[in-house]
Image (cartoon, rainbow over all chains, first blue to last red; front, side, top):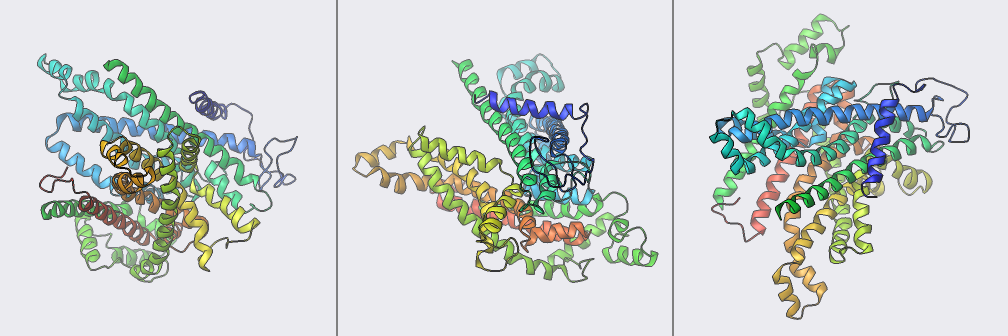
Length: 267
Length: 309
């Protein structure tokens, strides 16, 4: 249950995101005869202030958040992982500079920096991804560096060095496999925060531009009609929260599960 | 002790220098010519050149950086492109509102998190534990740009107890502070719980109980002070989240603080104001973390002053 419910939600999210490109959706079709109609038997989620189908916009929004979250986490791990591992392994002045950069990045409140970057870069989904990657890679880098520092004097690494393995081979073959577990746990929390960040930026008008749908901009547009049509705010918000909760639960579960496995191995 | 303080202050200064430099570079991240973006492409050539001169954008980068730093030292943030007023005045106008909101949010977060964490830890694996941790998980997953509108719907539109937005009246702060405080309470409650659980297994607590202290008293006077120490550091770090979240919360409630100033400035392409607001908030964050670190060291007698880790 602890695993299947979050996994089910996340899979549905992913399927809808991918499916949004094949399904016959009309998220931007304006129909003035349907304005602000609530959920009923004809349409299961109702229509928004322009008479657009909320169900269709929700699915398109899923695709937006999925694309952003996946790109941000993948790029963050790639950049942060490589820099973190290299910095931890080589140490010396490279590491010193790296630690300084990470410290400076962490001296910003993360969301604030993302908002400022998105504001400077201008609206659009690519700029949202860029802003979130600039802010997000640091966490993975620090994690990877810390793990490598703890592992680099392990026997198997020393043995590989003694056999003349190149640093790249040691980092890729002997260190990377050992730090994937913590990185995967971090990634699952990273997905949760990337979804919230994308929706937040779109809520502020800095993300996806109209008429494209994002859960954040759906909430923002809906707030103006909250008294007459609360479903405009409730539906995208509940969806957003369900997916974020699922990603957080999956992260919690992964952390417990991977810990247990480690303990078993030690015995 | 002075050695540690000096070292910590020095590293905060280095962080500050980096933050200022990054904020300085922000204006150069604008794609294309920043002057075009700020004035629009139809602006007169004379106006464009005047602004370029005014912002010093025609100078080499290192010279711009140096001018930016020297102006900052004199608390000179330049002028707003939109209203023409000195940015320092704009900041000073907005700071009280953000401080007010953050303080009330912090009070709300602590009053929610302490009992939740305490009950969850002392009744581990009970219905109370699952209840409070479930609440914490929800609090972490509710984005404040959704919780804000929901609170407005219930508290302002349906019940009519609070104003929808703005800062008029004593109770206007409640809804935004609740929005901001809940997420923080969730994280704090989890932290207090795990920190307390660790302490509750310690020998000195069993000794206190063996001496005849009631379990409530043992927890409150012996366990809690120890458990709250690590929470203090987290509190400093969480304040960053609070300040970042305040940008969105202030926008939702039209709360006239630094965050709203920043969003308004982004919409008006008033980049000097954006830079100043980001700098102001980040500087607060750095200073608060410096203070919590020093406070932590001062409060914990176990820290070795010669070599604090």
